[in-house]
Amino acid sequence: MLHFLQKLGSSTRTNFAKLGRATYFLGHTLTGIVDVALRPRLLLNQLHSVGVLTFLIITISGLFVGMVLGLQGYNILSDFGSEEALGIMVAASLVRELGPVVTALLFAGRAGSALTAEIGLMKATEQLSGMEMMAVDPVNRIISPRFFAGFLSMPLLAALFSMVGILGGHMVGVGLLGVDDGSYWSQMQANLDFYDDIVNGVIKSIVFGFAATWIALFEGYDAVPTAEGVSRATTRTVVNSAFAILGLDFILTAMMFGDI
Amino acid sequence: MDNSDISADSLISVRNLSFSRGNRKIFDDISLDIARGKITAIMGPSGTGKTTLLKLIGGQLIPEQGSIVVDGLDVHQLRRKELFHLRKRIGMLFQSGALLTDINVYDNVAFPLREHTHLTESMIRTLVLMKLQAVGLRGARDLMPNELSGGMARRVALARAIALDPMMILYDEPFTGQDPISMGALVHLIKSLNTTLGLTSIIVSHDVAETSAIADYIYVISDGKIAGQGTPKEIEASESAWVQQFMKGDPDGPVHFHYPAPNYIEDLLASSQSPSRIAVKQKAKKTDESLNAKGLKKTPSRKRGRSRYRRED
Image (cartoon, rainbow over all chains, first blue to last red; front, side, top):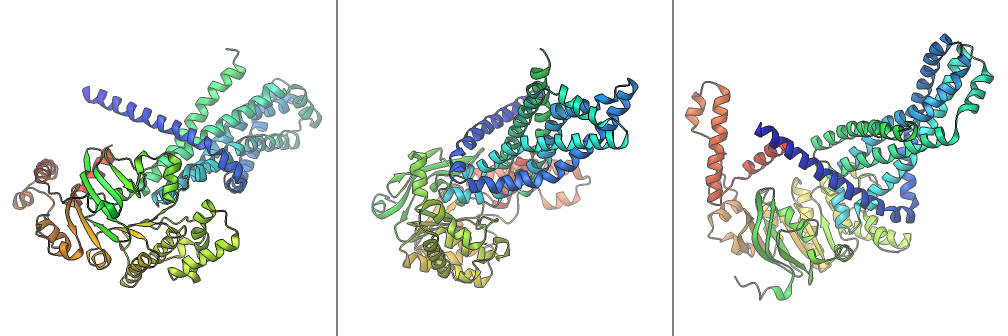
């Protein structure tokens, strides 16, 4: 029993200490906006590796998620004879929920893990220390551009995901199952609200992007600088990002749509 | 020894420095001076915190106690900006080279110049080629770091370290894992750079022969204390048994060859594996402590102990 309490106390302490380091790290990263503004080239490079290279997985996943939504939605809606509502159903699910959440999960898996591994290895090979000794702040020079790149990419990737998903739903619903083309689009146009649905979805994706990139970069920066340490940090990135994204999603949804 | 007479022409003076990692004391109240324009070597077995000392000098770590004054500036009292300014005048050669792996040799050497100066690209080109020529790698400028051999990577890192014309260079284990030819090249380079550029060099190493060949003054560190100091000749003639063992590389001496263990015969005859393992562990711990109390410690045991501790952590 005493042993259990001791363990509990020590892990609580470790975790709070880590949270403190992470917060300090975030503050330090945000000050790097000056460097990023002075050298947009750094940001562009990272936008490419964090954002553009994630393009393909997002597009393909979006397409399939949209197609499945079209199939499942048609099955349920046709029981009530309201297949025409397929457009709004697909669009609302994607824009409000699936777009930001699934994109963020994929983003954490594809870009987040890559960021952690890259930063962790830079730390393990003393590149970060080396930079520090060359009087270059590694957080501002290396971390900040990656952070802002992730933060900017996420909403765009989520928008892409929703867009491709709606097209996928259209392909299945209209192309295969025979829903009326006009009602697919007009129902969507009439019922999707710009502020309630689209803006809220974008806010979600911004929050997720912030959290996922922060976690990925911090885990890399805080990794034990050995092969084992970096691999553990990469795992933690994916796991912690998933928890953070899903937890935050519940909180945000409750605030936006929950009428609480 | 009276330190005050040296400190007049010393570039770095370390006073009463203490530093620990976890419960382990790495430096216990040590004081040392690094003379200006000379090559000073800091030697000791691996794990004695030689690299830590360089990180303390560079201001990357903060000591628990004591001060480090570099060129009249107390490193740990400086503000961030002043510290960065000081670091521009210090070159550091990391053991791994610490080259940036995503850019080629040329850009690596150009990196500090681009970060800290407003020189035009053509002037940077001239400087980079000069530095690469000095280390004999002008022809390798287009290679990526992963295409370099260990010795070449270290020479590139050296070119980068002297890019900003620093007042001193800190070498972290420059000779480890080098073949005799690149070792010779490095020894020659360190010596010649020191004289031609008027640098102050600090070499942290456990390669006794190479280091004593070029060092003007040597400090031998063991268990957080300075075990011996002097010119290479004085160190060679040192009366301390520990220093003698270290310099000659004798397998047995004050530092024992065997990791503390229970009686060999008993251990071999022990029937089951696990209880005896526990006994080994407990006994090893005891012997370890008693060794510690005598101020003796075998390095491999430290390392193993540390990683075991870390895993539990």
